[in-house]
Structure formats: C-alpha cells, structure tokens
Image (tube, rainbow, N blue to C red; front, side):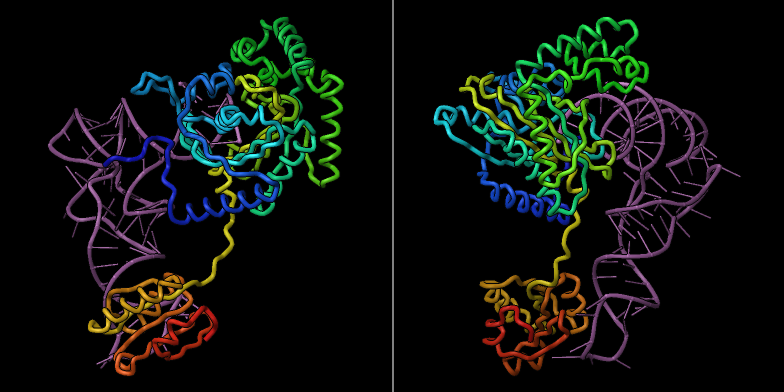
Length: 411
RNA sequence: GUGGAAUUAGCUCAGUUGGUUAGAGCACCAGAUUGUGGUCCUGGGGGUCGUGGGUUCAAUUCCCAUAUUCCACCCCA
C-alpha cells in the first residue's frame, strides 16, 4: 500500500468541515477589515526565501523543500506566505503605485521538519499582509483581527508582545549583545556559541539554566530602543489596553524570520501541546526594499490552521434536506426520478434499496436529514408521497406537486 | 537533527508467562412474523496483531532493523 508522505495529511469529512468553517469565518473577518484575497504560487524561486526569510533562519537553513526543476531553476515549495505576497506586490508594481494595499491569503506551506502534533511538513496557513501604512494603528488592527477571529471561534489565547527595534536601534543592540555573550563564551552552552554567529538574539531563549543565569544581566532590547521605536511600542500598548485586549510583554519573543522589525506578536494556546503558537506576526518595514521594491512599510500575520482546528468547536448543525426511499422494488425508479427533480432546489439523499418504513426512518435519521419521504404501495396507487418531518415529528401524505413545492416549512 | 514511548478489526482498546478457531465496546450490514426514527433484543461480515529479517518444532508474543504516530528538545504557524 502506498501511503502519504511523512507529515503530510489528508483532510476530509469532519476535519474538512472544520477546515472550511475556519476559512469562511477568517475570510469574513478579513473582508470586514478591508482586505482582498490574493493567491500566489506554491512553488517559487529559492532565492526569494533566502533573501526574505533569511539564510540564518532555520526555515531556510534546514527546512526547505528545495530542488532543481527540469529547466535547471533552483526552486522550492513555499515555507511561509509573506515572501510570495511581497514578491507579487512588487511584481505588480504596487509599490510604485503608492497608496494602501491589503491582502489575505490561505494555502499549504511546506517545511521539512520532524513531525509531531501541531507540526506537519505540509500545513496550512491563513495570513494577511498590509502595505503602505506606517501607523502603529495598523499593527493594532492586525492584532484585533486575530483576536476577532479567535473570539468568533471560541478559542482562548495569550498574546505575547515585543518590539524588535528598527535599523537605527537593532544593529547597535545586536552588537552589544554579541559583545556581552562573547565575554562569557566559555561558560555558555554549545548551542549558544553557535547562535552567536547565526542569530544572536536567540541566545536569550536558551533553556539551559547556566546560560539563563548569565543572560539575566544581558542587555535587553526593550531598554535600548531608539526614541521612535520606544514611543511607538508604548503607544501600541496603550491602544491595545483601550481596546480591551490583554497582553504580556515577552522580551524573548523573536520572530524566527529575519524580516521582522518593531512590533512582533504571537498568540499562544495552552491547550494544544508544545507547538502552542497559533498565530504570529509583526511589522516588516524593510522587506519590500530587500526584494528590490520601493521602501514600503508593511505589517502582517499568519495563523496555523491545523493547530486551530484542534481547538475549534463546530456549532451543531441541525437536520437538513430530504431523505427519499421506496418500499417496493417496482417503486424505486419513480422515487429516483422524483429525487432528481427535487434536487433542482433542495438537498436530497437517496436510497436505492427498497426497505420497510422503519428502516427508512432509521436511515433518514442517520444521514441527519430534516424530512423522510417514502413511497409505498398506497402512495404509488394514489400518486402521493408520504413525508415525515423528523424534527417536529409531524407527517403528511402529499401530492407530487405539493412535495416539489415544499421549501423546508414545518408540515 | 537529538532523546523517549507506542503500533492488535473502520475507531477506542484488552490479550497471549511463545502452543489449535486473537477478544470487547462503538461503528457497519441483516433480522426481530411485511407501514413509524434517534434508547432495547438477536445474528452477521471484517484482523497474514505496522513492515522486513532472525531465534525456535512453533512467533502477534523474544531479538534486530525499518516505517509511522505521539511526547520532550529544537523550531515555529
């Protein structure tokens, strides 16, 4: 038997119901905020991700599905959604057009990681990107959108917030930190020594107690923000407080993608195991420029749909549509013909096998239809059809015309 | 990529100190004297016990390898 690749799942039945339920709800919220759908290719030039996500990141460094295609192009399956949207934004010359452009997207992403619950090799994200708005109000809007979506899904969360500074304050801080860590190099763990060269900010996240003891005295970015970033960060907090959104400052929150600056946030859930981040995002004012566009401020976020699906409780959907069946072999054809006609306007579940009334009722109940419609000997002779409303427990024998005219009203 | 656990029916799991036909609940199908559902009753189908090797008279059970899932690390959505 051939089975799916490791970490790649099929989505069907009840799972698919939740999947589409989430998508339609998230789409509705995004549209309420004035965002428009964008679809970008799943396959892109590898260079796009190297330049945007960053070579030092784990995503690019070791998790990409990368290969050379038949035209000798170095390509890879997208590991995240922002890079493609930004590429499209620039390619369509929207950076030159000026103004504000807001997009949302959803689709599969690919990362070659070791699978575990909430971490798949092919997974799905829903995300939004906003271009051309410098104001921190847009950052707040992003957070509100996520909050709105989670609220409508009935999902609880904790919001973590941090500021990563800008090109004025981040580089000096980074150097500061490198200097600090280098001084203590002999006493820190192997991982940390490696991180200094790749992504020094990450050392602050180290789980080793001996490292944490040392880093307690390390310089903190939040205390080294320039005036601009500092006041924006406090304004962000004020705005969130005014909107009634609670948050916690997490100075260790470092978005693992190199393009983030200033606002960084992450929504986590305590109910889905160790892969607890259900949404994450932030500002990336310099990315458009990195990808050869005109400097354009931008903010965005992405949500992990599979992780959310663990938490979504579907509203109970009631009985819907019609079940039709025949009680005798010679009536089946008639019932099938009638079902086809009824399907012009309604959902009809059809049983081709003749059964007694009791079994038809059972079957109708099982497929959760509102009406059970059966033709037996009596109905065949009178040119009628017997209909029972399974919800209201009422029943009636109708002429064929009356049956076709039924539109879900109680009998 | 590192460490650990698990894998028996469609699903959730028992079980065999190595020995004839491997069990339960749920689900599925069919009946319950031939027109009234979601609770009951009776019966039935369905498993080469994850896969491949090894030890043995005999392996689902012991050993090795491998795959997958899960947990922790790592990372992130």
